[in-house]
Image: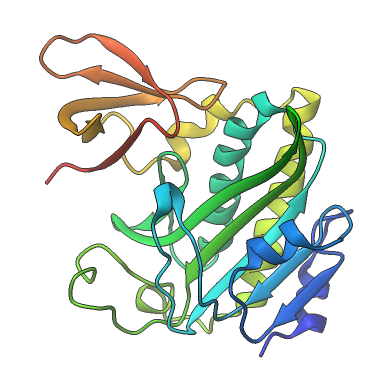
Length: 254
């Protein structure tokens, strides 16, 4: 059950979340917003979706213990999509961090103690070269007490990392509060996403394994560019390079 009254009492936005639609079960919260007619900032929420998608075609595994939501955005130019991915990651971290310190794995997987607690997906529908609709979706493991054996070593939940009473409505409100404020500041030019990376990153100045075109390379994460690209340094040659979203996946080097 989602307590709308508690949610609205915690919400401090001008647009984001002012129109919220609660579903017990959906195929995909992203699909509802992409295929329907909703005003800017509308949010769709569920605790169970049957055909959730992750980045790179991955499937979001859900048992009904999650907070799953999507928000409808407009007015983002193509060059703003990658920076917004980072802003969204920061915002989700802020919401989860009400209960347990949460960090970001580039570009926008939230982790607690190096275990994934949230995944995100940005999708758009286009008219010619222009994005007619942009939808950001996220799934957060909230009340999960255990995970399937094959992912238990790399997945966690808010429940497993706090002794506080969890209010998923508070988490969502804080995410939307942060997201709207950060996005507006970014549009105004007062928010520099690269300057915040060292605060949020789970791997800043640490060794990571980067997978590029099927090849695994060891790098040092050095930060991000203002455009959101990841800056890495080859541990053998010290060569600095930038990695674009969509080109690679990367994981923690054990």
